[in-house]
Amino acid sequence: MIKRILRDLTHCLRQLYPLEIHCHAHAPLKNGALTRTAAMNFSPLDLNKAHGISTEMLKNWGRTLAVAPHPGDEALGCGGTLALLSQLQVETAVLWVSDGAASHPNSLTYAAPKLANLREAEGKAALEKLGVGRKNSYFLRLPDGKIPFPNEAGFDQAVAGAQSVLEAFQPQTLLLPWRRDSHRDQRASWQLLSRAAQDLEIQSFEYLLWAFERAEPQDWPQNSEASAFTLDVSEVKTRKLAAIQSHASQTTHLIKDDPAGFWFSPEFVAQFDNSHEAWIAPFCSIPEVSGRSRERSET
Image (cartoon, rainbow, N blue to C red; front, side, top):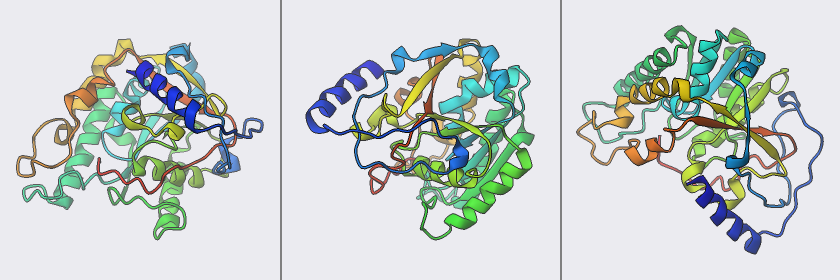
């Protein structure tokens, strides 16, 4: 599937976007949110050619905080990595940004407050499957589908909440959603955590989620702006899949009175049932958010 996506992207990009990107030396996250550039030379990263790193290298990450815009994102996007970190006894935690309560807006049996509680419980159950443990869970409980962007109401308050988590956990590594992923909450979460951590010496890597299905050509990671690496998660894949299934409200028809509600289709989940997880390591000034107006209803 990745090869097909990249082939289609390359075809479109060569015809439509004869642009260039201006890079500088690697900028740590402490320098703040990386700024939008006026132009870009499109050459999509080929994840099939990404170099693999050994599991032992994860020990160098130190205390690691994974950021998930919604409960379930942590298991899908980086569940294998979290399981490996736990296996290596690297202190690991997850911060969920939104409450996930918008997935079934028409349900009477699971109105928003009850659904939010359920999704928190599912997140904690997923962490147990991954070996992380329930105690290493943090929740900002921002409105699902409405995580604020900079200059929107509530952004500064949300940043303060994220900074409290960073102060409490003291991570050395942040695992963030890809900054231009296809869901608006993924993009807003990246903005939020980047602002919260802008004065800290923290390394960060980014994971793709919705981009695998429907990234706009300009939103896929480019060779000129980042490198990619993969982790072999085959030995913990069973734990990852169990963690995904812990989110029963999203993987089954547990909530029966909102047939139009959102859930992860088997086809979608199957995209993450593989032996490797890919990570993006940005190294230059790149666009943060493209096409912010493209709202997504998925939660």
